Length: 77
Image (cartoon, rainbow, N blue to C red; front, side):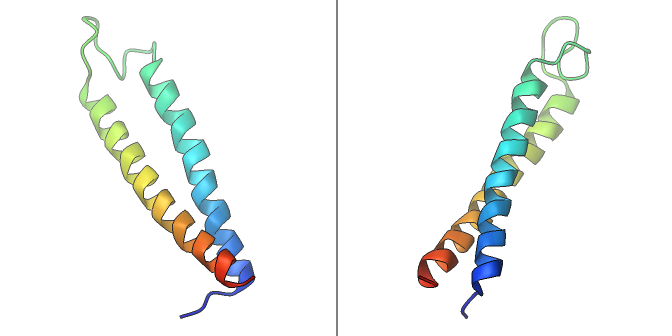
């Protein structure tokens, strides 16, 4: 299967975008002062674990999509 140049660039941009968004989210999650991510004792809550799992999954999927896009861009040269 050969991807078009437009689709390849879109996939690559989506992979990069995913990393930018989720890295920012993860940083903000660990700086949370609202009491959602950490309880009063400073222990992680279920909110933190669920959102951390979402971030890690998005990192993995964003990387996979970005790699497919990068390979498509390289193949279209």
